[in-house]
Image (cartoon, rainbow, N blue to C red):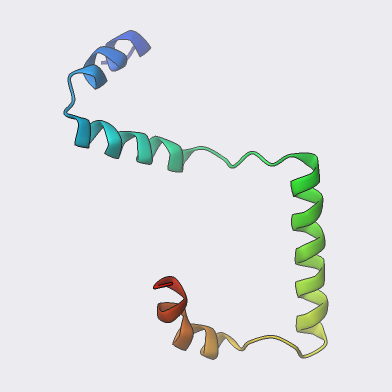
Length: 74
């Protein structure tokens, strides 16, 4: 199975649950696309975060490790 048509035919034969799993996997393989404005905001946010960390503000990596479970559960 090496052509797009062959892959499309095979995907059409998959049950819905497997097609959904394939779709999620394919989405995870692509690079996120940012607009110029989104990229500017991201870079500005990262600059602010670096400034805060340099100023002694922020959370230590040990505290992050303790809290990550609770953050992920939200």
